[in-house]
Length: 163
Image (cartoon, rainbow, N blue to C red; front, side, top):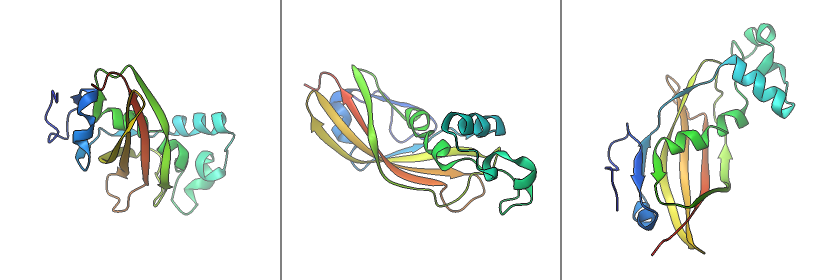
């Protein structure tokens, strides 16, 4: 049973696991935005070992092609989970598994202090043992930039009672 309207993009939707197939082809709205700070970029660089100057050297990056540092593409991609969960919660799933990604691209950079949001639409819902597998198209954007900063398909498995 759907407990919130799927047409209101400013709020999280809560749905029961048995109703996931009803979402095929549906636009889920636009998420909140998350600001990307230099501290986050530096922490991500430390965690991944990717210390390329365009991300962490603020002085050199100021004279570079983007006029400042930019977020790692994979840092932007890592926002998929919190941005998607801002749009959809499955209240009776006993387990949620991030199963993978399809078709990941980074068409535009994310300058430091940008606020990243995502739009989501449900591409497919497939039956799996004890649940459903959702394929969700995500388009990440920042204010004032026409091109998306990341596009991907995220695959999530929801397990529980689907009867």
